[in-house]
Image (tube, rainbow, N blue to C red; front, side):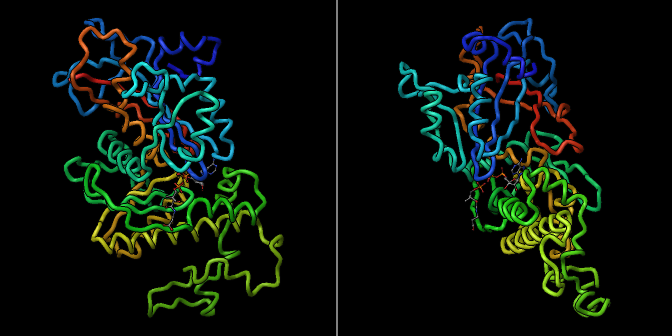
Length: 413
Ligand SMILES: Nc1ncnc2c1ncn2[C@@H]1O[C@H](COP(=O)(O)OP(=O)(O)O)[C@@H](O)[C@H]1O
Ligand SMILES: CC(C)(COP(=O)(O)O)[C@@H](O)C(=O)NCCC(=O)O
């Protein structure tokens, strides 16, 4: 079902009983992310008439029951500074009705929505005021790790490598996933050593992250949106702004320490020796140099952190990446260069939604008890599991926005 159809004139009761939503939020320093479930129209629960448009890959039909619920898991983001747009969207889709009643006070009408990120605290009153709902706060690191583990274990083509314009999906063996380093590049950067489900430690971080790119980029190029800044960076040439080894060594390599003449010796360093004002530089060259500087820096710190803990695999998430080839390539090259090929940089299809997916999964039994609460289930399943259809993951390499929806099924055991 296209979730936008819910905007067309149905009242909230009809929507609530007809389509069942389940919503979780991750409100970060830059972006508010929503993950919500919408039920398929054609789904029929608890009888032989079940119709499954989706095959949950990795689980053969013979080894599994038919799904008790088919639907879509939807991903959507808004700028945190425009939180009212996010509230408006939730209202228009009646997503707030997809929360759950407080278990400790079943009679009460208080609906809670799982939420993580700093905004779960900052905007709690706003959600209460606007919708009368409470935000049930989940720890941001818990959610990032839970989201990453869930996606990596569940979705067949979630992880991929990217180097030299080559994207390659990586098959993840569930039994050989840990340990790994999760580097989440949001407004700031968090580095988490993950050793298992719920077993992790935040081991490092840096304040030079996505917010730095967007903030400095805004000041230096006067662009009005993040997409505009990304667009500029596609077209720019950092050599116009950066000081290269060759600029210092008269066009020569510094081969004794392994530096070629084209290696960046000093990001933005060219500007010190040229008698130019900021406006004399092309905004696209500045954007490119900035993106490269920040990506290189994060790649290097990530490698050093991985080295410190003997980790060979680094998964990069967060919306700074935006599946931007240049960003991914720079991060990969930095990890590969510094580790002499020992460590591997990998990326996630749902890069920016790790926290929101984690919050979604943190609901009681993955929020599925509530999902089914409004269903006429003849024999309620004792144990539930949640499968995303691996065959349906969109390949949106041309689409860098990140908002999407994927088919999924809920199974009883
Ligand atoms: N449409 C956008 N608007 C603003 N920033 C964006 C956008 N898309 C990607 N970004 C980048 O993603 C970063 C935020 O990533 P995210 O993982 O959502 O972190 P946070 O939880 O801190 O908001 C921003 O700082 C910016 O670099
Ligand atoms: C404070 C944060 C956890 C907030 O998460 P975010 O909204 O950036 O996703 C993050 O910005 C961060 O880890 N900053 C780096 C702080 C440091 O280690 O220096």
